Image (cartoon, rainbow, N blue to C red; front, side, top):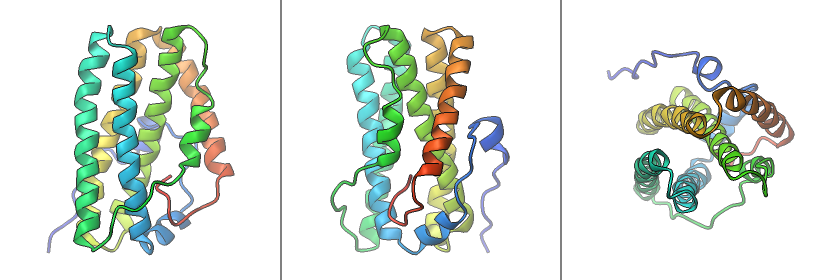
Length: 208
């Protein structure tokens, strides 16, 4: 019998991802019973993550490290999109229409617009980091609890990748703003993210 891969850094939510609030445990139960909608929403999450990386590259082409790292990240996110499509196809599902991601919409309202260009970049990078962190946390729940062993393995692999993306986004923010400022702003946004999670209903058709 194949054993699940060991996740050696078990308390990542607190030590690396730093999320203030864990997902309602009811989410994984209802999500696993509605896997078509979850996979469709997940596919669009990966597509949007790739699009965000491309947008940042286009807006900040002079920032060499950002361009290099996000180019690699975009390629990985698009590969994830393709892998989710494959999981849909294997189960006889179509991609379906895009859904409004209220979680991301609310987070993006806290990016300070019309401000210093690098400070706006910091906010965008940190919001992107938090989206990756929440995705990682949800993937971990699916890995541990979803009854489909193939999807369990799939979500373990993506969980590890999303944790690395969180770290990359925070490190990039510290490349272009003072690390102390980044840490303070990250704590502010973590509090905001937790409040958003609290305010949103537990849905069976959304990854976030």
